[in-house]
Image 1 (spheres, rainbow, N blue to C red):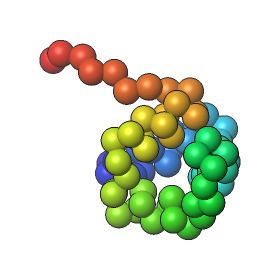
Image 2: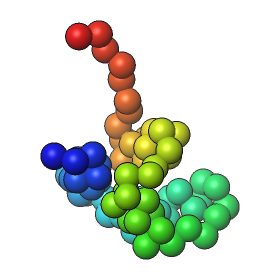
Image 3: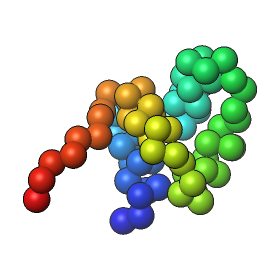
Image 4: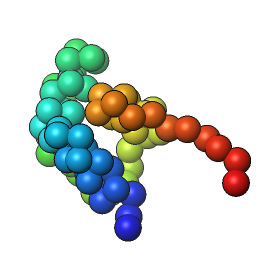
Length: 68
């Protein structure tokens, strides 16, 4: 499953939406990024690592690096 599908599924699983995540990102940064813009970044898989970390923080998750 592509990364974008995993992230979208996790957002929905936690009871959130792309709209609510976009609103929270805008609130945190004082920006006006559209839902379309966030959705496009996810679709193209061009999110920065820091953006993914912040999205996960918003929905109550974190990235954890563990050895194999």
